[in-house]
Image (cartoon, rainbow, N blue to C red; front, side):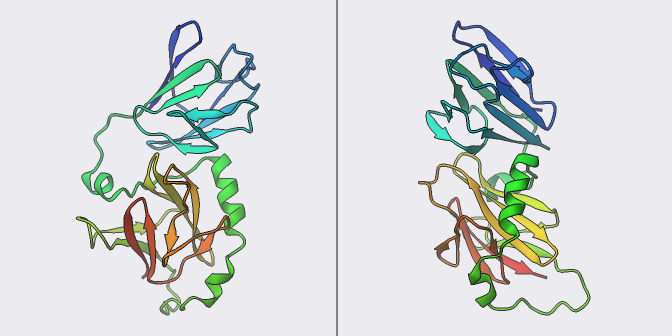
Length: 234
């Protein structure tokens, strides 16, 4: 379980464990982390934690939220990240449990978003991009349910695979570039979530995906956070 170490403008420090899915931050006393600071909006930000992954979202606050000195809207938190809200700093310390080297090296981190992210992803995925209809058809799978997977195509982990069995899977490197792949009745969609990789979105077949989710097709090449992966339907 991760935690936020909060230091207010007077230098007072307090720990807040991220022990539930949504931890709200703001000036109003009904927040899980209440900050007595006029520069902080009533409901300023929220941290969503699913399994071992935590994500920070700014709730359209007046003065904004920064992570490591950069303004963010949504940000996947990683060990040591420093959040600035008004005159307050919140340092993120993640779960210290050992990561599987396969995931850590491949930078593929399975996980799910909370409701705030899920609604955005599902809304985008409901409208496939026009390019999806022109893409090559996936192999016939008869009556069997369609199952997707990613196969790493570059780097020392080339050939390793990740099965996309969850309704929502996050991939990428926290703080650099993160995307979500949703599994829907009509196939798989990829949508950009966030990161600081020059503001660029992930590439599919050499082109940046747009603000709407992109419907993946068999053998699409995804480039994310410096790693190339093929999307395969089995």
